Image (cartoon, rainbow over all chains, first blue to last red):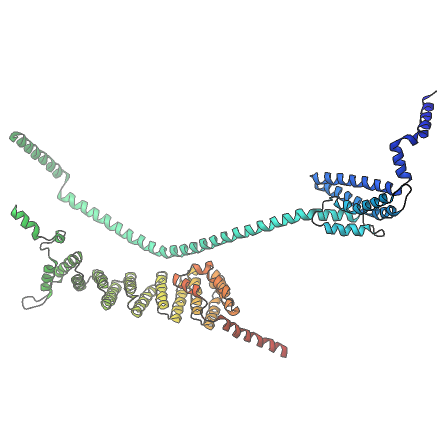
Amino acid sequence: MSVIDILFRVDEVCKKYDKYDIDKQREQNAYGDDAFARVYAVVDSTIQQALIKSEAAAKESNRAVAAAWNAEVRRAKGRLMDEVPKLRKLANKKAKGLTKEDIAIRQDLVLALPERIQAIPDGITSAASHTGGWAATSAHPHIKFDSPEGPVDSDYFSHSEESSQFRNEYEMRKLKQDEGLDIISEGLDTLKNLALDMNEELDRQVPLMDEIDSKVDRANSEVRNTNLRLKKTITEMRSSRNFCIDITLMCVLLGIIMWLYNALK
Amino acid sequence: MNRKGVHKTRRPRNQYNTTMASSDPNKLLSKADKLTRLSLTRWSADWKTATVLYEQAANGFRVSKNIEKAKTAYEKASQGQQMLSSPWDAAKHMESAAALAKELCNWREVADFYQKASELFMECGRPQPASDALAKGARALEDTMPEEAIQLYTDAITILEDDEKEQMSFDLYRAVTSVYIKLEKYTDAASSLLRLGLAADKCNATNSQTKAYLGAIIVYLYAHDFKQAEQCYNDCTQIDAFLKSDHSRCAGKFLSAYTDGDVDEIKKIAQSSAVSHLDHAIIRLARKLPTGDVSSLKAVTAEDDEEPLDENDLT
């Protein structure tokens, strides 16, 4: 027997004994018997995927990537909301092997679905009503605003909380700068006035300085003349020869006095 | 020992400093008087020695705090110097005499002496000390005889302006303005400020000029004379320097705040830096603005505004 033969035989055998495969039966049962269960399973898995994606988007630092993921999450939410009315119909349908309690449970599950879908975080925290509105409109079967509006809205909204923070900061910093500039302008005003007053005072003193200058020049020349005359007079009265004689005589006199003093002591 | 003790008590302390032969100013004074008084024995007064003696006597009296006698001695010394035709020394003695008269609170004499001193300075051909003397006199008389003080200030200003030294006259103008404000003669104060502006214009001191004009407008507003203030503002804006300055903008703001009747705005403008660098008397006035009822002015101006609209409708 060749491999292919073995494979074919295995397939046949599996097909025969499929009914004993519990997981597969469950799946098939779910698929086969119950449209509700099938759809519900699909919805559930989609919700899980959306949750994972939104968590990843929240952790993502790259804003563009985060925005794109949020957009996908939102798209998924929109599609899920579409499924909800279908599920509601299916939940009410009576299926084989379902008890009344099961039907009630299924109805409750369907009711809980919209909340679960809304609870998926998609980057909007404050504008939940908006998303509710958008989601509601996207839930209408005949209006499908999906791909073209999605990213634009998401970009717009995902910036709003951060941009409002930025705007607040910007306003506060602008106010502080304005205050500082006011103080600076006051100081500059005072400086300007002081400088103008000093300017005028100096202008006033310039002619006075000129007068002082001329007067001092005159006094200077007079003093010099006087000095010359004094020198002339002194040299006339006492030439240097006479001066030396005076000094020698004074020294002699001092010597005599010292000798007398020593003698008398 | 006894002799020494007697010797010590005989001489009073303050006369240790005098360096003349007889150390009693009274004696000097009487001696000098004798020299100047004409009598049968004396045909011509010996002013030279007399002046010297008078000066010494005056110094002695001043040291011993005998102000009355010192003043008379200085007067006589000044007279002597005049006789000796040295007006400078005469003027200086007159000034000292006036300062002593001020201490004695003899205001009439203060005025006379300072005026005489200034005349003597003018004789020397020195207008500056002359105006200084008058200014000193005026300052002394500000509180007691304000009108006299104003007169002296005005004379001092005239002397300076004749000598083309307007720069020096700014201080005097400001003093005159403050005296007028104290006397509550606001129109006079404003007119003296305008004269200040004129003097400043002559020496191109634009800052003082603009400050003077703003001050004048504030004084008019304080006197609650809005029309005058407006007129003054219009006149002053003809002058280029004022038009371009901060002070004219401040004045315009004041006037517009008055027409709007906005009291808070007026108070805010009075706190601004342009006003705070004016003379303190004027700052005080500005802080007290607005006097009287500003809203009445507003009503008047509102009525004026309606009429032109009606004319437009008719045409």
